Image (cartoon, rainbow, N blue to C red; front, side, top):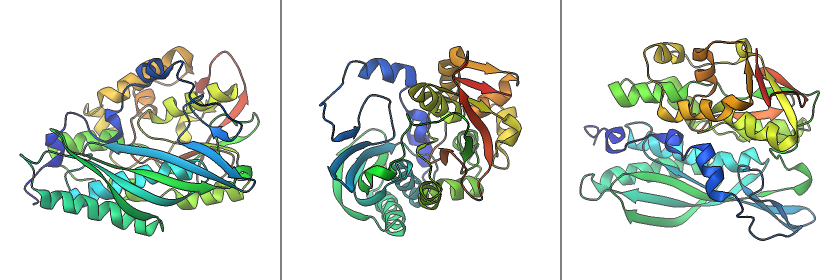
Length: 326
């Protein structure tokens, strides 16, 4: 099974294969859906998941996420995809309860034994999260795809949202950046970056619990739109401006070298172009590309301090730009 390079069977990889944020916003513009005071989070601000109140103390969190292979190892791809899907629930301050698998598989070109390994990886990560996996849906697809639809629970009074950032609070990032350029290098060369895999399979559960315990009210996870893209969405929704200290942002080992050697995805470049009209920066283009790097299963970006995680900037009153990088 190890002779199959899964990344060679897909045109994109991981969250870098997302539809560009500007295009996606045009697609869903005007699709307001059902209006109700019990729909706590819907389509309005492109948050990480939908949230519906069930009673005074309970709300349901619903999300789905899937993508093409981001690494060649089937088991690791399954783990990464599952951690990424579960992350949307954690980004809302919730607890995942049950998930179903989403599978697209090229039966004519890849053995089903590899799919078993993908599903085993997803199942192992869900078990670590104490989240049941109960079935799913599969189709015959020219490109391999895997992910999960996840349902979780959250206390409405402890909900994390992307429209609740408050001026005067710090910005905390709970995982280093750089998996995008490293994954792109892996796809091109076959080099394996164990630190990147370890980062992507690590659950955002502990970070979310720490953020909620610290009183945070605003957060998002950093995935396909990059730090700058997700930060722009949060600040735009909240009516505030983020000031990022570029020197404080942590990166995985090898990320800058991968950037230097040209392993930048098209998704990363589209992220930067989308944010650029709303950006003020005193750093060079390479630094901006790293900050826009399309992440897969990235960390949480929290408004407030999370113990043990680096503060990478602050939220201020809305200025001329939505995001400033210094």
